[in-house]
Picture (cartoon, helix red, strand yellow):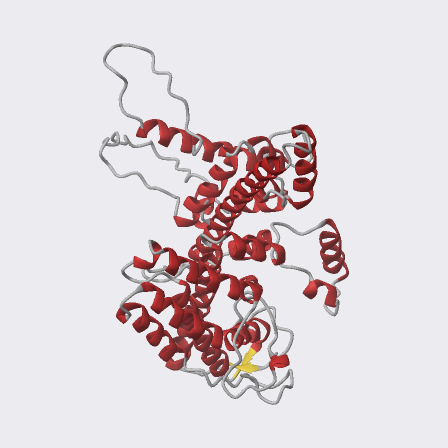
Length: 465
């Protein structure tokens, strides 16, 4: 996968990712049962996991804005590596995605095989590649680490490239490069979402390497690095990437640049808001998986406690057993992921500040046109007239995350995280209350009409809302 082992050598990939993607899809469509197809896909994925991780890592470190080397890459080289990375991501997504018939979603054996594949990808377990004799050469690196590094890294600008073509070929090459760079980032976010969906074990592994927000030591190290402008400080590169970093990085959208330059984005093209939607969807599914994990641990702990009570009824009193079990459970009980997320100011503020697209905020901030002429009569709006909705898929997923946290009784933690250390109301708190109010209003509208008997309806909001 790499040439010569030197860090400055170019990437020499011998993997046909397009053929592997076709083989994976063919296995899911033509196999007689979902279990057999999952076994074939799992072997195919684990065999090429080392190559996949290497392609993603080298692309993030050599052909993005946060590259450490390769400061003079040609535009043709960057374009070819970007296309190769996109094909590798498509192969990984085809392996982790359900079959077109969705039959493996209801088959417990197929579901277990897919979850084992997710855990293997998160833990970095892989099979030796063809022609590889030394097993020590396999580096165990979770796939999510490479994905997070790729998402945080912005696309490489043309200012740092050489060999830029002239004439009509310039516009075509630039357009193709920007489209593929955005596609790579979007696919990486979607693959991260597939990695943590409906899998408590994989979600816990990802959360260990990618926490919700940086620690106090990491914040001080980042601030000192920015103040001193110490680009040679390796401690910043070694610090763990957090979910708040992912959201902040993809929130730095090109929408402001597009609005300033008058660029119109077509409906069929990928936008940076789609990347943000995929990242927040991954965060939401991770929280759901961690909540599922906590429920399973509580059920297992209760079953062990009851079994131990039955075994020691004649020797130990029930109070002593409860005391011993509680002491053991306190040591084994994992940290509540939802409480950590709600108590993270960096994560909560990053979500709230990214609720609306930048283009919508720019329109809101534009002053109303002043006119010295006499104002004209504006006809009233028709009730059936369509109302412009400034929200998008990213707004919807952010609302899902906030609703999940608040519905679990963490509204005070989220409010404190959005409020900072002051006593005054912050704009983030206003956005939070607006999101929750909208969710409650939607729930009220979905309720059936009141009874005709005139009795007062004593409905209460559901736990989900």
